[in-house]
Length: 188
Image 1 (cartoon, rainbow, N blue to C red):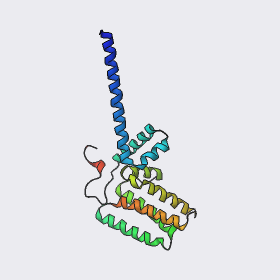
Image 2: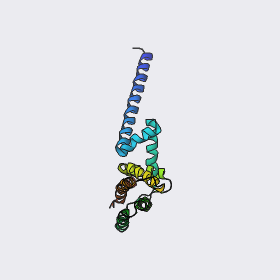
Image 3: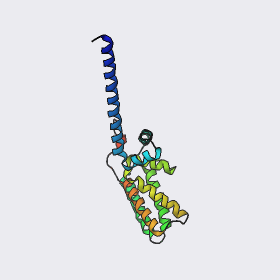
Image 4: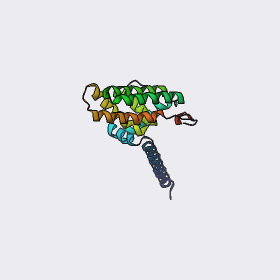
């Protein structure tokens, strides 16, 4: 075999190997993001209309949250927030709309105490999705109902469902940990 043909075969082999490596890396990235974000992964793909853009956006969320100083609540703060939650739930019986507004503010207070920025709602959802992907849809549904309640466009059953959604998020955020959050560990 002459040198020219050998060179072409080597180049083809190197290119083929590079394509295989690229595909494996891309698939691992995709599986890692699907595992971490759960249903939020599919929602991002639908929102961005493109898997590559969605994955880039999800990785940007991870990087943003990684730079935040998210911390667990100490037991005293967790107990204080839990007592506030119980009072808010009790208020629901007499004033469902007021209780929904309080639940929203209480969730934001817990987020702030943990180190999450609490400005824009969509940014809060994106930030929460990194470490609490299982409750992001609860947050969206509860917030949508809270907005409808402000316009007096939500029935009692809608408000009850919103409280259930807020409670799922609240309980997930409230958890007290003895170790630092995952993203604060060495090597991440």
